[in-house]
Image (cartoon, rainbow, N blue to C red; front, side, top):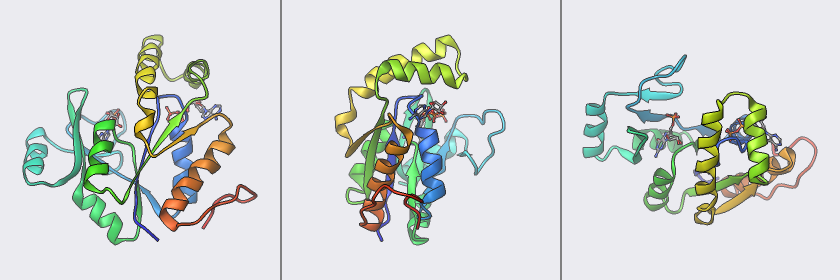
Length: 199
Ligand code: ADP
Ligand code: 5GP
């Protein structure tokens, strides 16, 4: 078994949350990475659950001490994955699933070249992406427009990833995704079938 850093990127509304929740449920070697950030908690977010929330000064000190596996400034705040978090996961025999931006994904690939797996999850079309964003019912019209504009940019960069999975039929996309992750972690090919890729 190999320890991996599995980065999954997708335009907002593609289905990343849905598919990642299932990966975490069905692949026991995978745990969700908890990033450190300088942004303030939103809503019910708790320190140590969604993020480790820290002051900017502490974040800067950690950068200077070389404490991050990767870090980036996104929308005016700092976000990073600590080396300690990666080391502890690996020591426990786990792989990490990371929701980080493209700059962070690039740094991980450079810092952990043999262990980083980058997967791009794509919607079947921009029309379907727009339909999903509307059907989800969580975003304002303005937010949907912003997400669609960002999606066009993200789609144009998909060739930088190791794998591209199109989330058309959810079951099919899940088995493709799980197959890629399991092949990387366990060196095992998975046939689509009853019961799924359980341990
Ligand atoms: P993301 O995390 O990428 O923003 P979500 O997981 O929230 O996306 O999914 C966006 C919406 O699309 C949700 O309402 C979800 O139920 C739906 N969805 C996800 N995958 C599919 C699919 N393959 N076909 C149809 N609807 C989907
Ligand atoms: P949010 O503030 O909405 O939780 O996240 C904003 C952005 O920061 C998202 O694009 C998310 O992927 C990115 N992000 C979250 N954690 C990290 C991290 O540890 N490193 C990097 N590079 N990006 C992150």
